Amino acid sequence: MTSTGLQRALRQLKRFTFASLVLPMFWADAAYAQAKLRLTDTALGPISIVAGANGATQTIEAYNVGAGSLALTFASNATWLAASVGATRPCQVAVQFSACLPINVALNTASFARGVYTGAITVRDPNAIDAPQTISVTVQIGGGIPDTIFLYTPPNGGSDTATFATNSVLTTNATTASGGNWLTIAYEGQGSFRFVQPYRITGRHIAGMPEGTYNGTIQLGGSAFPADNKSVQTRLVVTSQPIAFADPASIVTKVRQSSEPTVVNVGVGNRGSGTLTLASVASTMTNGTGWLSAALSTTFAGGAITLTPGALTPGTYRGRVSFTNNSINTPTLTIPVEMEVVASPTPTISFGGIVNNSTFPSGPSLGVGTIASLYGEFLGEGLSSTTGAPLATTLGGVRVLIMAQPLPSTLFHPGRSIFKCPLKPPVAMPLFR
Image 1 (cartoon, rainbow, N blue to C red):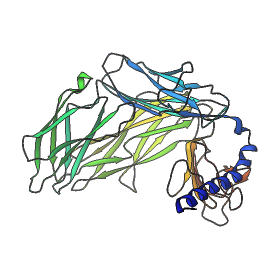
Image 2 (cartoon, helix red, strand yellow; image 1 turned 90 degrees about the vertical axis):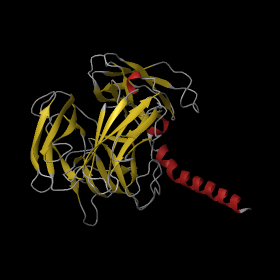
Image 3 (spheres, rainbow, N blue to C red; image 1 turned 135 degrees about the vertical axis):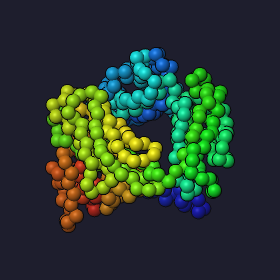
Image 4 (cartoon, rainbow, N blue to C red; image 1 turned 180 degrees about the vertical axis):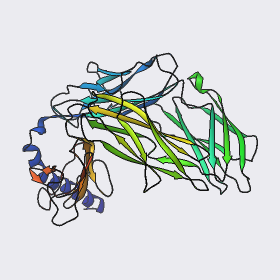
């Protein structure tokens, strides 16, 4: 047998051995005959829409890689976003499958002012494996390209960037009126089949460039969306003053109605020179009252953001938190906040949400003794952790089981559990994707 043939035979033997070990799991589980939900995409946009108009209906295909059939329902966290399912048809995107269900996504945006809006649709099927799944939707009313861009860098050879996305490939030209050749624009080429075209504008400090403001222009053309064909005035500010940024730059969370407050720490950093000073932090709510508050931290540069669902009715609540500071780029550094309140949530493992805790790949099986992470929603309440041996199989009132065998856990919080796979058969665990 050739070396290639031997390797092929070993791979086949390995697959057979693996199947022999895990098939009893399927036979012991009624899920063996269940449908398995797949979506051709889980993100739509950014989609550019003319101000004063509704967006064109978008379509994603759903298909079944299991047994039985799919019975899809939908929930939206935004009033302008709705989904419906069409009749079974030949697959147009997932062409390797013969039958798909089109999910039609309506964008009711006619009343929106210019800006960027996000929403999410949850696709459910109570009898399907790998459900629910979430489709995120982003629209940019009037287009996503700003008229003016300011970039900030210290006089140390650093750089600053700005990004935007269009729905057409553009012709681009970058020119500068002062300071030398400091301005570039690059097509990043990471768009999905939805033809989202990402671009990155970069301004860099050139050796010998003194502090000051330098002018440049990005000329854009060739877009099927007329508002994208424009000149973008670009300014590079070289400064020895503080340049502030926030981490995270936004807060999005989903909570149970009447649950305990959720606290998110936001750090404010300085990528410039000098000393960054935070004077105050304030919160503003777009809808709802009393659910958002903020306080400056005494232990780190930033603040603690508290989200309190209380008795708020189920729905999505939006607001912002603003840090007043002495930076040159954002003297009022604003963090958008979104809190979705759910009345009676069901503990859910995220699609593809069981991964190796060190490499975080999606899809492979976990071997004996693997330390793994399980990601999901509403897995329990509070934060719990342990380091003592032997590790507990119940942590924070939550257990992870394989074939009714509880697994040792090291950490748990409402969206994540870290556990260790069993040291005896089953030797490997199939992960449904």
